[in-house]
Structures are given as structure tokens and as C-alpha cells.
Length: 335
Image (cartoon, rainbow, N blue to C red; front, top):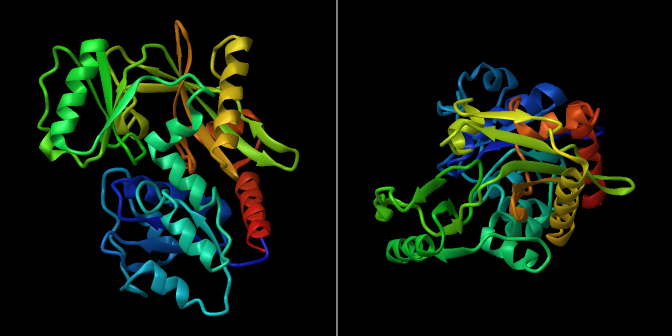
């Protein structure tokens, strides 16, 4: 790749466990990389690749670096690079890792990094902002945003008067952390314990689809559609995604051509409308009355069990080639 590449993983959000698993997969594929762990307390540790690979059960166990921190903050670690300009492969998720914060730090220092820029990253992680940008362009489920426990309780009650079932999602978050489905008979949880703000959205019954997009030399290209089959009564939550508890992914999805084209068009529309770069993944529901947009992930997971690598494989694209192409794209953008 011509320059030093640093895999940046961890971060302060709940998604750092997924980030560790993704870093393991990316570092094993790219091979000649350094690894930085951004700890929950803000410190940055230089992690030998062997230490990263030896960490077992990353989805459920906390990564504890063996070496002391090299910097007290990510900004300090970046400033200590002085004249060196390595490229960064970000495997972070959630607040600060995927919301444009890290992307802004790197862009201000003219450092190359994978994925979308600060603005698109911020818009994609904020579900309400995403819907604003796509309103009138794609079919959206009715939703409300709550910033307090009282507002959340009122929003749930109001939405359940209109719909038999709702889904609660953190307004800014991914990996299905904190997702909950409620119906009219479900006992209400203690909303005071929720990490607000939250979005309350009409639960759409239908087939769960996801479609990835990659930026190629000829422009954005949609990948094969993946279908997520959920056992009856289940939800595609964190456990279903990463602990194989209740979901099966089918790629390419067993859907007809019109639905496949519609899903890929929706993913391309969301990718371009939000200003994404490099790659993204759009989640959709195929209901009886049409195709609904759910959300877009501007840094879709690249763990060994993630959906995006499966779509790449179905398209005949090796993960090593994809990662190398992304770093080439990032280097051109940083020039």
C-alpha cells in the first residue's frame, strides 16, 4: 500500500467489542499493519498484532492491552506523529468512532482514512438526520425522537395507539446495541435507565434485507442483497448478529429480480444522498406495501461473521482486494 497503515480499534462506545473482532479480521487480512487501541478512558495503546490475535471471545470479553498507553488521548497520539502521515483503517463504531468525531480529527491533519468524511458520518449515525435527508426520496417508517425518559414513555404510548408494535433504537448507535421491540401487551421497561436520546419507530413486518455499496472507479456500485432470516418472535439484535442466537443470513438473498433491483437502488440512493464515500450498507424491510428504508451504516462491520464481507464474496471481490482499494481511495482523498 506504499505507506504505513494503522488499524484503529476500540473506542468509548458500547460497540468496542465488535471493533476488536473487526480489527482482528482486518489486521489478519492486510497483515503488514500497526494496531492502535483507543481505550474507553481515552488513552491510546500501541498493540502488537500478536496481542490482538490472542484475545479470545471479543464480542463478549473486554480487551485489556498489555502495554501501557503511549498517549493520554487520540488527539495527542495523532499530534505525536509529527511529520509522519500514516493511513488509518478505522474499525470503530458508535459515538465518537463513527459519528464524524474521529474522521474530523484525521481530516484536519490531512491523514488518510477509510470510509466517509465527517459530515456524512455524522448524518448517517444520527437516525433522525438520516430520515430528514431521505424524506420524500425513500419510503420511511413513522417515528418519533425522545430526549428524556418522560418523552420516551409518551412517544411509546402514542405510537402504540397507532401501530400494534414499535421498535426502540438509540438515536446515535449501531450494532443493534440497545434495540428493543415492544407491543401493546409488553411490560414497559424502566426508561430512566436508557442512554437517551432514543427513536421510537413503527415496527414494519416483512423480509429484512441489507444492501452494500462500494465506490469503484466507475462510481458507486451495489453489492448482492443479503436477507436476514429471524426466528419467529426474534429480533436482529446484538446477540443475533454476533452470537448466532436467532438469525440466519442468506446471500445472495432469495428474492425476485424487481425486489433485488429496488433494494440495490435504495442503497445507492441512500449512499449518494447522504454523501457517503468508500462504502456503506443500507438496511431495508420488504413489507406487503413496499420497501422501507431503516438505516444506513457508513462503516459497516468487517468481522469474519459480518454481512458486508459476505456480500463482497458473493460479488466475487476478495476482502484483501477490497481493503487495499479502500486505502488507495483514502490516500487519494487525503492528497
